[in-house]
Image 1: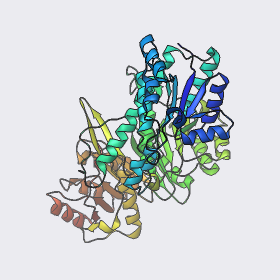
Image 2 (image 1 turned 30 degrees about the horizontal axis):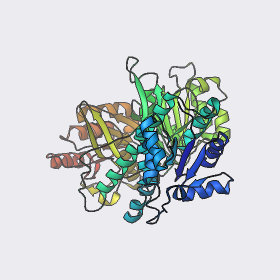
Image 3 (image 1 turned 180 degrees about the horizontal axis):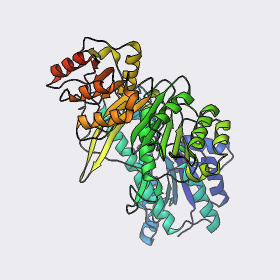
Image 4 (image 1 turned 180 degrees about the vertical axis):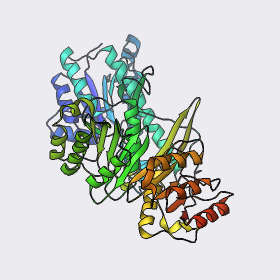
Length: 533
């Protein structure tokens, strides 16, 4: 490849650009830049020519027109062959061999609460996108660099080769440039389609861009190839942007369970912990302390907790770490072995981290993930839930409805006590995250019984009652959808359940309420269901 002699640098995000320019100049590259970038480079003592001086045409329209000029784009689009180069020479145009451009921060701007349409529109980059596309079209001759993350790699290669980039690097940079503008344009289209006055059902076409974060050893099963692709610019703490601080690589199933666990603990304001197996919570606890919450979650179903994913909504402290270690020691070599596949928390206090890692097998088996704050305030209400089916994609709003006590309806003669109401709230929020048909039984801020993914609601009730055992007595039961018949209420009553929360809306509602009254059970309805298929 030809040596790079002229580079055009025009960036919105100026991170690292001065150092890149300095390394280019040291290789004999001439730099031209737009006004703001040029000013920064001059402040750092880097020689630079203003694009306006080169074109003989000033920036105008409040900066809307900067690089949209034939002298710029001819220099980018000319093939490095005799006819094109002769034409450039006749017109006094320099070939431009490298473009370093990142675009106005449109995606970040529209993520701001209450951003005005005018501000969003002004952050739609035209000149920058045109530069990127022009350079990428001529990628065999022009290197196009669209991210500060690429600067060091590109500069290092130029330094190794005396100012040249390989054909492979040119291709990679061109591909990334077109992906960059495609992602940018898709965000603009989706934003404009969603502004006031447009249909609320969403766009007619979806252009999705996901970036590969990592290859995975395999998928759900060893014979399935797999990788983890993520959305860039997502600010909500989640599995996609969590920081792994120790342990082996995450597996496909780990990531699914981490996502499920984070979703549960975000529901609660109190210290909360969840134990997840196969994307369902088998134990959830809330308490005055994180240790209390964790112990409730674990002892909700200690048999199922083997090889679990555990998620916490508070930074892991030393006291909770001791509880985890004590549980491990208590079951080491006993009838109920215990280890955690993944432990997720907003953060890890140094003493807690040291305590857990004192046992050598933690580094070998347990992955620790740090997410940042996990609460409802961190939830992105605009994000959508997407699920792949063969030949298509199902898109829906995320199920972010929580618990609205003001919308509850008391349908029985007997009302729940204050303590029972607190447990009904807890059981309802847990049930929302259990695969339907779903039944949960709770008592004292502790999930004690779960019936998940059953084909009939009565089977789900029987599973939950069996799991809960004697702990169901005096507890509460939540159902993610209405009861079609009174049989589940009768089973709950026989187990000693004192109060039930369910959506209502069944043709058999009257019979179900009569059964609850006859059996002395308090019942409230929410008017909202929470199917999770």
